[in-house]
Image (cartoon, rainbow, N blue to C red; front, side):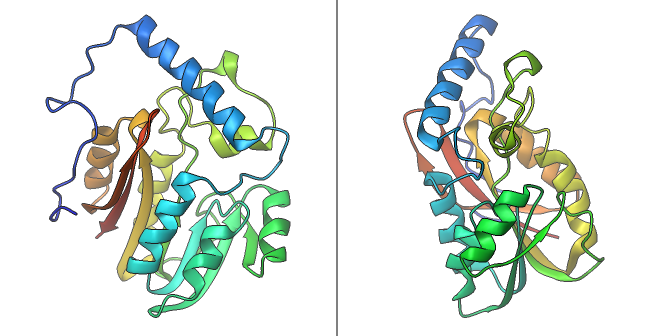
Length: 221
């Protein structure tokens, strides 16, 4: 764990990437194939994986009050956080109607929504988000619900950045967000954007895997 606005960067110490463009494209292709195989593209709802476990761990420790998990998928993370001592209520949202049904079957209060659009101002104590973060180009994207759950656009941040811009609107005065970040998306870029949106950033959970490093940022205004 690091201090306020001091985050551990899983990338190079100088923030640069020495690989050329072809190497990066090859890594994206290989990573995408690996993740696709692991996460089951024939399943319309994103299933719990390593990233889900890290977000749930952070949520049990740091979530409080009224909690909204954005992109709840199967509802597994929301259900894991429900029993935390400081949590009063947990609601899951997802743009995928299949995910909303699956989450409700798990006992999670779920609402169909696109990111934070339907949430009222100053009403949420904790936001949880495991965003679509896999860098993909338009010519390699699928047109299905798993695509919505996995694809973060060319940079991997196409969904993260609008979430960060809108999160201060819905958070209560002492609210916080727990955001899952992959090294594939440019960790330092995500932190920089969060700070630009008014957040203090702290890494509270981090784990490295052969194909990526996953971190959970605690973001507070």
